[in-house]
Length: 347
Image (cartoon, rainbow, N blue to C red; front, side, top):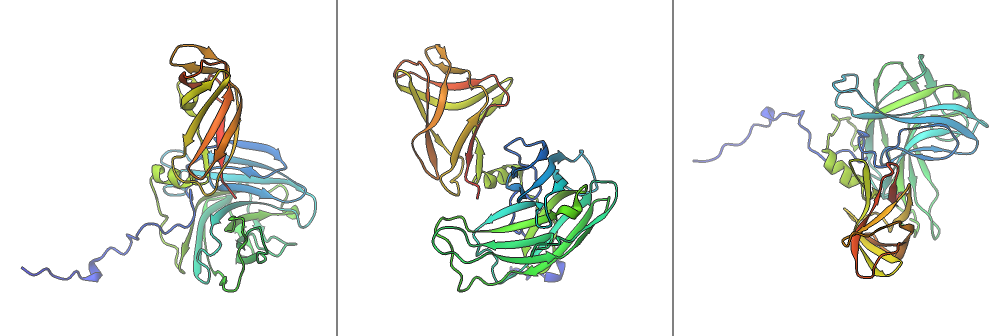
């Protein structure tokens, strides 16, 4: 029996294929740094994964990461949102804004792209952002050609020269054409990227604040329904740029598994990343790592955790000082809930 052709008129055109959102963690549910809030901030702040509160010069702002209540319908399917309020700015060119940096400056070059997101004022009254005093608008995208060698200058493209925020959650949609990168020079340091910017606030916006949720950037001139990916998939995408390698269980925190002592007072491990990272990451740690628990039962206090020999896009060797018997194996443990070990390959 011959198969009949499918009438395209019967296709459900509302079912749009996946991999549309160029952004990672657009639904803002992955938060490996456990960021919650900052008050009176005067520096950059990494927030939920891939999102940055960015500023320049003399700026003071509050920032926070918040979960939506279960079953809310204000922003359908949204899990969390970022919020920031400008307290003060030093001059007409000082700003604070929310950013995401997208790997590879050639992404969507010469193409139309459409940005959609939800936002509202957090101050009890609406206001308008217009980013007076700088070349960029309050919602824009930047083609950054990186550092090293003689890269081309930054190219900025506005999605909007002004945006009026309401006190209720409102969906905003903008379309722009990214310039071609033909003839441009990319830097040699491997950090070129697109930089999405939302909600630039400047000195005349002091006292105002914005909440932002469910952000999508896609090719084409049409905003399609928000692309929902599983948490596991979104986490894996985020881990290309950042890993918190501690493991919480009960009241304890395990820092490293499969740790071995190759000599008295010298203990090490090789940690294999969950996914290949964008670049060899920087390593940092904090909190109280109180024990090295060996298979022989001797518990000692570790200290001075350092990179040990090498690090790559796939794994890193870490060492620490602990009085352990050569040849013993075990793990590091802490009873401090604020303990962390970060691997950072962000831009």
